[in-house]
Image (cartoon, rainbow over all chains, first blue to last red; front, top):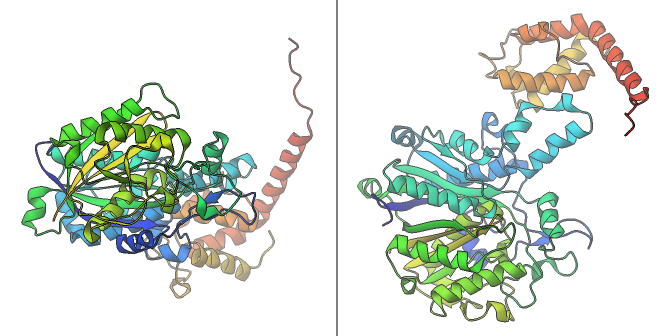
Length: 405
Length: 110
């Protein structure tokens, strides 16, 4: 327990390229599916991992909510509604509880920003709508989730690139543990787009356009060539333990540890010692030792430097005693959604007693060796798991969840 | 802009149906935007932006449009003012064209 009160997870909703429910996602992962496709018609286009965006999918959201939502907020709203239904709470109960939310994303909505600036730059500012702002505001996923669920508690929107979602969960858990909120809907969301992929490509961190798109990304692989951007959302209902028990809630697990730190002065590169310190601090916050962990859900995005730094840190903290895999090979890097979305997948792994391997990992890079890589589906009971998320600016975040058996 | 009243009604109503997702059966001249049709002030801004584009006019500086309360008010507004709005749009277009053709200001020599 890392605070005054215990924090459990009582609801889970997702919106992803490989499934719109955790069950669908797990089936896709277990079947080894890849969400990665070419972003355009020919080999000049980078690979990407898009989630379903057809407008009809979001028609169930009332227009008055939907008008302020770009895809990232739509993903969040759908995931949030699913999490609410899964939790068994009603909107009336949320209002009585003063439930809040914490939802992070890297930059709100890249498509809405693009649409708005396109009008301004082309001299068509008279076509700008107030909705362009609401759709592209950096906290659009957070306030839109709050509007969708009718939340009246605090709204937080951690903006920490690829660690946004996990930091949102950590923040919500910290607040509940401190007795400041009974229920928080926490998660992350993001969109992919040419600007996002292009930014990584400029840094030579993106998988190439050539070849079979689904061959990338290849986390930890000796042949890895960079990441692939994905998108989607995941929202978890975090709840104070005694409240959850009193109302007979289904409990996925308990957040027993969380820590976040930074690597000092790094802009884009991960720092292995800082990551190791973050993971060690997370174990300390949970009051457990690394050997108590049954599985590490790695951040590993398939970048040369990032994967090696994380592997080095995992080697130092866990040695070869804990199985490790990354889901980025299947889903791509869903950016702000990655932490919560991959946690949702791990809950399913725990339910099925099956670890999903790292996709496209055949030859392990020697720089990533010395840890227990899961390269094929492995039966294993998960009692506690570790989740990593790292981000530009040297941001590290780690979380430990004990599964409710 | 040189439209009959029926064409104006059709244009306004189609904006309400397509962009505000209203039911055509709910549209009647006496209906108020806020109470009867359930729109709010942000919707009205978006509606006006759409009608500006549709009619090729600008409403940004127009005070009268801000007083509309019913569908009939909007039909009446465009029917009554279309000549004035069209003339304003033409003048604005000419001014913008003239500004584009002016030589750039002289830059100080360093």
